[in-house]
Amino acid sequence: QWLRNPGPQHEKRTLFGDMVCFLFITPLATISGWLCLRGAVDHLHFSSRLEAVGLIALTVALFTIYLFWTLVSFRYHCRLYNEWRRSNQRVVLLVPRAGGGAATATPATPGPRPLKRNSKETIV
Image (tube, rainbow, N blue to C red; front, side):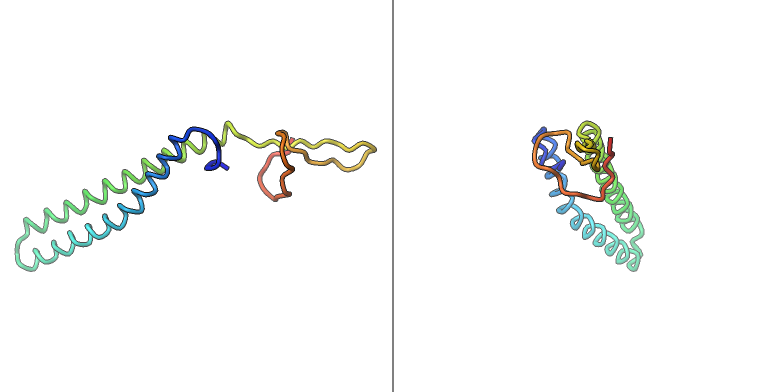
């Protein structure tokens, strides 16, 4: 429902862009880190410790920046979703039937009746 919401398109474009970047950057960072570590091992075997330390530092910096970007992006989109969820709650009213029968659930908003679900909806 959140993705189909006719709200601000900027948020959806940002989410799509971050997903594309994540799918592109994750393998790139993994391969780059592996190559740097592999190069560091090779330099250690040829007693070139300074280059090995530099490659290890580059690997640590690469993964630190990658993890930082991933966490910041994830928290941003979670915050947007939580704000949307707080302002778009679904309320189901129980209206008693005439004649003392069982109560029926009716949606608070006009439209087709929802299917019966076992969810965490609050019944008021």
